[in-house]
Image (cartoon, rainbow, N blue to C red; front, side):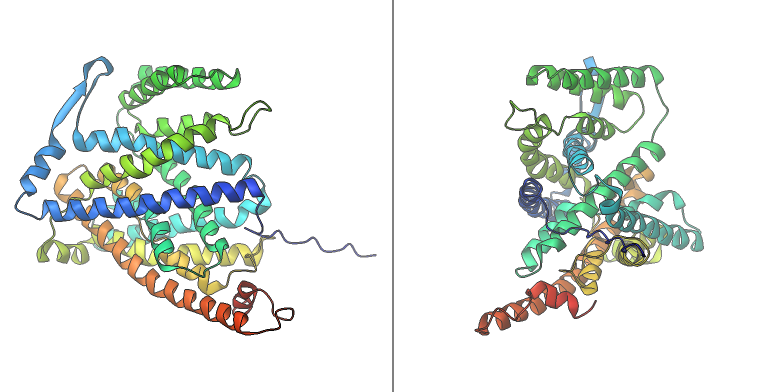
Length: 432
């Protein structure tokens, strides 16, 4: 007798209640954070192009330090190297949760988002490299269009959608977790300065102590806050971007609860720091990273110089093509399949939306192009590419939202609900 065929795993089906609650909480926080982030970017653009633009530059370039830690940084660098470490700490916690109890804990469920995210990083990098090489430009910025700004993307999705399936939001969140990991690895591996192995050894020793404190269930912020600051400072002085320290500590924090605990250390830390990350750290980074002088000439350079043009094409075309193709190929050639609630038009709209690259894209742009003049052009390209991707995605999302709304209204008008399948199943069936 022939063996029964193995059932293909369903990606982002009905999630367990704890994970559903975690996803909903993350969405709420990141959506609000995205709106705050948008406001900070707008303020920066208006401020730097106003008569008070020189005040903005003086504040951004003002230096102060902590001699005991060997640090003397400008305000702009404090936000990029210091405050942004909080953002990456929260990202590390979310990644750990996905690896332990979430969608990435088994290969079958991880296949689709991992392949889609990797494709969504490789293809934009290829778009940039080809464009920059063809124009005789600098290929060092290949990693700039790789990153998706989850806060911005979720904010756009929340504002424009009212009837879209929850699986679409969960798809975006899980995709962004893998995308964040890719961005973190790129920063750690490719954008390091001269290494100070003594400082790096100290940072590693601090992480070992951090792990032992977690292993032996030591509680109390007075242990972890000073230790975390010391690890961050050692990592910075060691030549590795200091935000990597935040990710490392987030991955070490315990995500499973003991019987005597109401919440794990990772849950408690995320609950406390998520508002700080979304409402303070990332917006302040955006305030001092997105201040670009906008003129007709500068906008023209975005589309005439190879490096900025490569960033725009990578974000707008590369992201959409990479994520959509990766998702399709994973669903076609692996056991993972697209959630029945979703249609391929939904996936394409989401792939275009993922072209909003901001926080990590701006950070990588600064690391890849130390020259201030070139960095300004790259920042402008990130802003232009993100706006174009957001506008295109808005059109697609509104169209899909209208389809689901019409199906919802049709179902409500029909008195006999027994014979009508779920509206999301119907919408998916239109294109599967």
